[in-house]
Image (cartoon, rainbow, N blue to C red):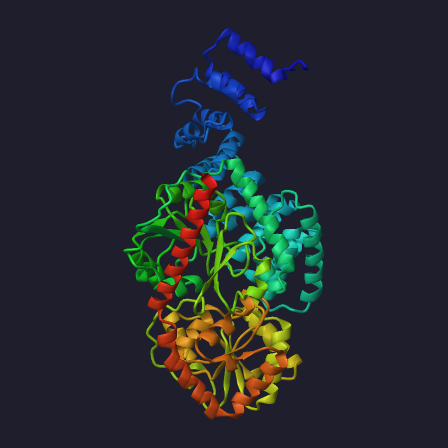
Length: 639
């Protein structure tokens, strides 16, 4: 073993302490040296000689480095000393942020910046902490301050781009992604976000070539993943056949599982319930005016309380009408958005949850690490992530026989649970009178096609098909949801290039759900997007009595429209090929009587065939049956 060599500063401090063992200045400075060199135990011995209120940040950090997390966290509450070495405060704040102690971390980051306001590293980590707590406005200020001082750091440049994207400043985000790629041309995360932002902005000019570059970069990543983690969610948009997605999902799930194992998987000893009421919980960041929230908000109150006690764990703060409906519909609603994943898992386990239903998967603000810690016996993916997660911590996936046919289930790692109807729930809502076409900016006598899908679901192939539909239907218009000026400009340019007059595209802004339902009645036919169908939008259309023409795809995301049309008895609105889709749209323009009859059938079918109470009963029977099967399997395993 090599002999340890003391630095000159360390020797000087040791001499000072030899002369006066109570010299607090020397104790603090020597402790800092010990902590920076990884000698937490020696730092703790030194610090124990200080007065109770001295060197709190140092003591907290030493306890943290020594693995005494609970003591470190408790002491750190009063560690924001602006006189402390800013690097020590930075290290402590960073550690607290990793532990999910966000409020304490933010206080200490602020104290560190008070002493080192030009330190790009502190600004950067402070920004990350602010972003994690939802304070995007302040996070952006910190990212920009850091980037102004360190413009060659690709990690920092990329995080700034993500914050701009999350703040809905998409044009700026795409420009920032360009800066990232100028610094680091092969940056996988930047290539990934570039393709996604191109879809969001309908900026298709360079999309095919950039997507090919992303595909090659992903192949390299999957061959040798390393520490970089890439969520597979965006691959649902770019690669609808699912092959690349499935490999990326399996890689991502392995990384998450490894991280959970390093934290110490809960795997609590559970008392399997062979009878009596089960505790069922829903986990989501989208208990609000989000597509998922709008679909499920009426479901929770329908659960049979003789069979279930219903919990909801919210991963996002905020309150609106949908959130309030959800909170009122469950027995226990917990806002856990400010807790670390490990603490949320402990809460779920402590609540003795039998069935945990994840409504987010790998989508934005999801927390799959919670499920990787295995807080419940049965863990089910439902509605939020419409693909396989390829994760050992997800036992089952809920769908129906149209979106999850037996012929395609071999690629799924989950056990498939099939409802006896369309798997999309419909929360009943009042649909008011339509404000009238003139008020909506629509021609009063034209045939109005519409698509209210999010812009990322549009792509050149389907837009070209829509332009052919307009060209074959003189006088018709296409009503699109597009708030952003960039999206409108790009779509108008694409229409002109296809030979369609720009005035035949009419753009709508986002409005509250009640207004949206009412205005949908003014359209004649909804044109669905293949590969990534309308989900909540198609449910809303059914409520408004608006028929939807869909093109069946390969996986769940491309088969939702077919599922809903099947449940409603409107299979003639589901097409197998682009040619059939084009022909059916053209035929319905010409045969208004046939379309009117379809609308009448739709209005008569919606209330009965999409009953939320019957849906809930079907869901409950499915979950109870699978829980009993899983319980029996676990009991056999333990024998």
